[in-house]
Image 1: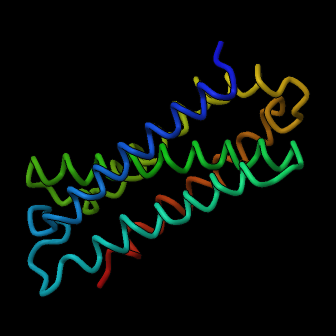
Image 2: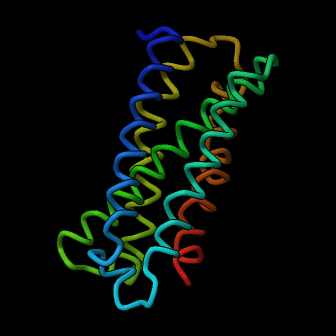
Length: 167
C-alpha cells in the first residue's frame, strides 16, 4: 500500500517522463510521419504536446490547492488518468515515428489503444491506491461514477489529438 506522498512522488516522475518525451517529440517533428510533409510541422506538434501538459499542470496544482476532500480526489484521479492518456498518445506517436506509420490513419487502433491503456492502468492500480488513501470517498467506490469519469476524461483527450494536429 502506498501513502499519499509516495503516489504524489510517482506522479511527479510520470510528469518528468512526459516532459522529456514531449521535448523529444517537439525537437524532431519531421521524424514523425503524422506531422511530416508540412511546411511547419512543429506547430501541430506543439499543440498536441504542450496544450495537454498545461491542462495537466492546472489539474494537479488544483488538487494540491483545493481543501474539499471530494474535489481533491476527483482532481487527483483526473490528473492521473489524463497523464496516462498523454503518455499513451505520446508513445503512440513515438512508435509511429520509429515504424514510419501514420498513427492517426488507423482510427480503430488509435481509439482502442489511446483509450483502453490509460483506463486499464488507472482502474487497476491508481484507483485502488486512492481507495486505500481515501476510504470514505463515494466517487472512488462507485463503479458507475468511475465509468462516467473515465469517459469524460478519455474522450476529449483522445478525440482532440487529431483536431489539434491539423495545422
